[in-house]
Image 1 (tube, rainbow, N blue to C red):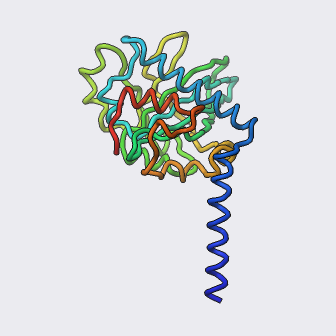
Image 2 (image 1 turned 180 degrees about the vertical axis):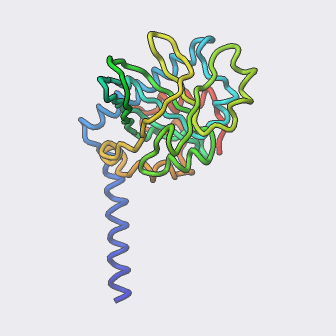
Image 3 (image 1 turned 90 degrees about the horizontal axis):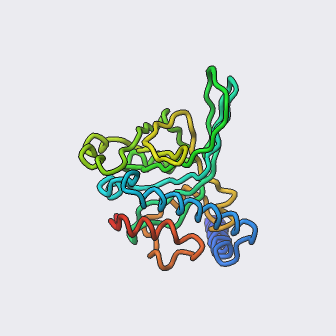
Length: 238
């Protein structure tokens, strides 16, 4: 009986690794195009923010961050009952530097007298192990179980960074062409595992637990831009 169970377990593990290897070697072309666009858009937003002295995130905070989440074009619409939705990527620290992108989604609801619609780019810095461990779950709620505060930006921000070191998440948003430190509440982030499985053959939570990682040069070329940009700005390893 034990021998039969061992054989089944061995076969299951073998099939799992085979599926993962096949997904990475030959991802679905449509899924690959979607993932490539999302990764490149996220990198463009980060690079845009960091290219301007008045909007860049202080290096001291980037050096402390355990993960960075970038969600381009978050849509927010409201008429009495409000909603927010977006898709982006998360990268985290590994022994080799910044990881390959893990694809994520954002969704949330809000109540009250409200009307209108907007499109906002979000950048979230996960600052410590508490925030990172919560990110390992299938879903986290910003402003609920996971606290988030508006992050400092620009030339004068470095002087006040000590005020933000206990935060679990620092949040930034771009509205009307300007980046600001914005408090984000009522939004949930969870792995986009439909896409993660097609690209990597893995669920997002298992990718985020990977502390070994790989050098940026070994990350798939289509997804390398954001990890490379973060490596340039903050090369601290775990």
